[in-house]
Length: 322
Ligand code: GTR
Image (tube, rainbow, N blue to C red; front, side):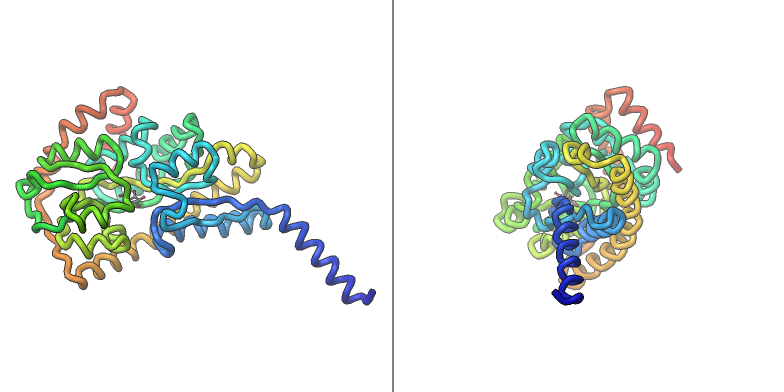
């Protein structure tokens, strides 16, 4: 055997060796490729792959390839899916602490939400996932959600009366819509476009990037900037899989997830601007109703959902965060 052939053989063996030592983890996201949350998880994956010398590789299954959010939440708990990036909404029925950042108008602004969720209060809420079989790794920004519909511009709460809006599958959002005098239909994100197109619902509510990338703007031209919800996105890992990692690797995963947060914020800010410009250019009308009556109408929602002293304390601490 020539020296060159021998070297090639050794190199090939090493590649086989390292390839077989690689664990591939699957991460789910409902959004299309290129969306800020998808890209942030890919960035997390790069950091993990580098820092574990390729022992772990993260594959992001975007565009709901692994299922709609409510289903993927169950699958990540049992370890069928390794990692998941979802809204906090689908966790509301399971983990009480997730209801607080999902309350309407709990945050004064997107900056307020970032400060709370990327700080000690956020860490406390991430820790609340563990007893449910999930490791909370990081919160991303999901911006502010507002109503949009196919029928008419919304200039005040009065314009919402009797209209039908899709919400995520959580009682808080159903009660929020009822408190505003409209009717809520919980349904998976993937069914919203056809729901509006066929008239099953008049509209939905979301941030500009979702309104744009899910093409809802094609079928619902009236967007009203009432910004009733700022629901954080959460990035989690199945505890079943987490428990197979060494403590050193767990630390690498945790740090990489936290480092991906700032990357997501940067991508998010750019996407909000881009999406808003795109929907305006394609003919969406944006109205800006006075938010105060919307805020005032939320009292029954808080009264119903914030009864536990622990949750009440969480609300107070979030409100007191400057
Ligand atoms: C988006 C969010 C998704 C999903 C979706 C929805 O803003 O990023 O995770 O929750 O809203 O309304 O279902």
